[in-house]
Image 1 (cartoon, helix red, strand yellow):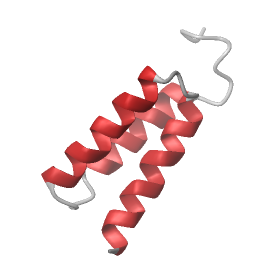
Image 2 (tube, helix red, strand yellow):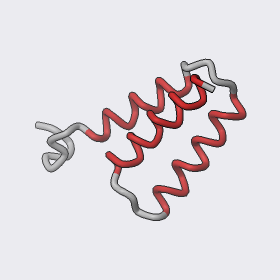
Image 3 (tube, one colour):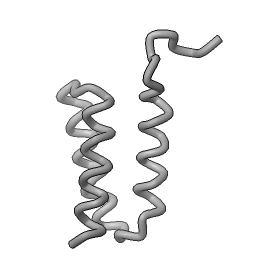
Image 4 (cartoon, helix red, strand yellow):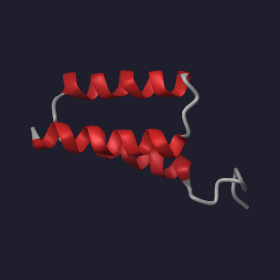
Length: 66
């Protein structure tokens, strides 16, 4: 049995994986801190976890690209 039966899209796991990829991306600790602060602000605004995961992925790719 899963911990949260309503989480059919495994957003908890996706969130943890996105954070792990962020930490291992090699973009620099200052940029990681900026993304983490943004993520916390999104959680305070009660955005959906899937939206925050998407933001983390896009921000990570943006920092890697530029």
